[in-house]
Length: 247
Picture (cartoon, rainbow, N blue to C red):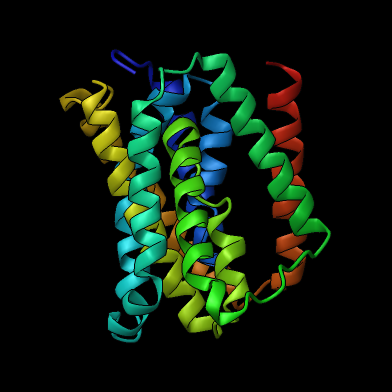
């Protein structure tokens, strides 16, 4: 984005504002929507580097705004460890071409949108199997994060199996997404995609993301969450299908 013209800067700011609205309403979706739309404009690693600071700040805010985190960390530490391990594994893989990264990103968004529209909810996992399931879900999430910059699959379905109450679920999402963001930032920096210029552009994207998040929190009380979820998941499915079709 060096020497980015003003119209392009405004377009990117608009994307982060819209993604912030989604985050404010649902407690998730900022990296998913932002990566999906930015993936139409620029290579996936560049889009992921833009996402770093807005994602980290909004997720840390979400994670700490509530009950003390000690209990959730004790419950979810294997998932966090798996996420970090998965991102490390992604870093050891050969660097993927942008076409492959876009294809995987599109497939993730398509699956995410379809499952959300279908109202799919994973079944609870037996307590004796939760440790292995958490580690496996974390590793797969980390690998997908390292390649696409999207954090939701399969971490979010795994969290749904734990049947957390709404407040704990929102905090758990913030915790997992914070871990994913930090691990992804380290990977991007190691690959040379997050230098001073990338960090500056990411900082510029923070303001519209935070503004959108505040608007989304207000809209949560005004608009039916069910209606918004249908629009959101439908849009994710269409966006994912478009990315797959144009690869």
